[in-house]
Image 1 (tube, one colour):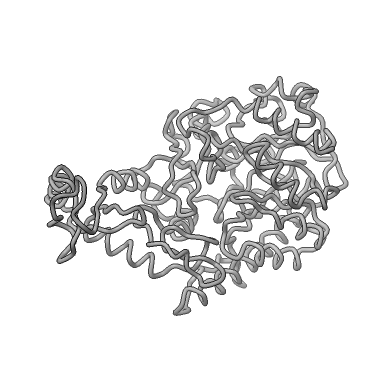
Image 2 (cartoon, one colour):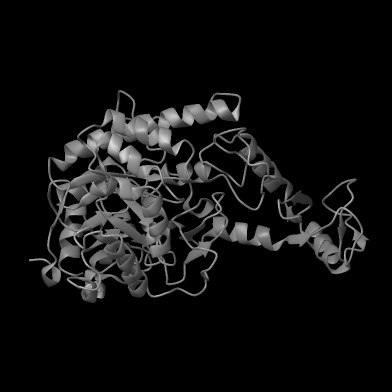
Length: 468
């Protein structure tokens, strides 16, 4: 028996539980976790964002970039991404054994997203049921889905965003839109679709927002049988009792991104799993340091605290003496003319005396102060850019036309590819970006995980179905 009569839905031609595994970035969901989720009767999701490939002995192939130019490294990255995701899909499909369904997740803002998606679908025909896609406005998702005859599930965080996608493209391929994922911008882990009209510090109740999304869908003639997938902050189904079988909302499914991280099949390293058990409420920070320009949520470890501190050591400047900028900056910027306020000059001198002796310019006419070691790391990471995003604020890379955003590279950000690859493959959890949803503190409070217990995916899905 499932919680409150939660019923299976028909997806991709057969019945599955309306429980979706969230597809988490670089190697945090792979064939083991998603294949097991599908085998348990749900919808497993492989992350097709720079997924791992394996050599003849089954060892992970390190993604090493040998090309000299960014554009050539970007081509290498695309090939790694296609090869890895194809391998993950094939393995997950075998593990699922015909049960549940396998989706793949792509970030529309990743470099070469369309090329990667087409390359993967070309080689996995009949294995992928659907494609979830967010981070940006993936207008072309529906036409790609139609070409390969797979379902698509756009990820949005408002009815307004969905309406724009539907009007421009999706209405033409309505028959393949299997669900709409509502990703709560205040609660979900990873990149979030918080708009400029919304306050990052003032979370809104998801119910009216999801109801508004359903209203838009109904107005466009979309059946209530097409589920809205609630993503972000979902832990216990009992917390969502009023959502199940609710005529205002229509069909609802639930996405679990954070909970599957702590399972036996989860591919993340043990140190990361251990750290999840220690989190307290408020330990996950909604921040804007990502080179995508999007808000994102991650554990506020020393990596994020360093980025926060770096941005705090920041002062505005002008190239000429003007207004309150009446004194010349005499630390951090050898032999250059930068004018600042007297108060900011004092702050800059203090930072310099603390060892933050190097001033780096940002695209916003400010200067941040960093240590020589930080400066060298930032410059090296920018030089090593392999074009993992369609637009990167950190390195000024763009994946088309003239391959540059035309803006100054932003030293307040970081190389997201480097840090996500490192943490996923055993790098230190406190020195890397550690994505997590805002409910991650529940690992410490939920009796299911007490005494260091780590469930299998099947045990987790069975537990979720009880309401716990």
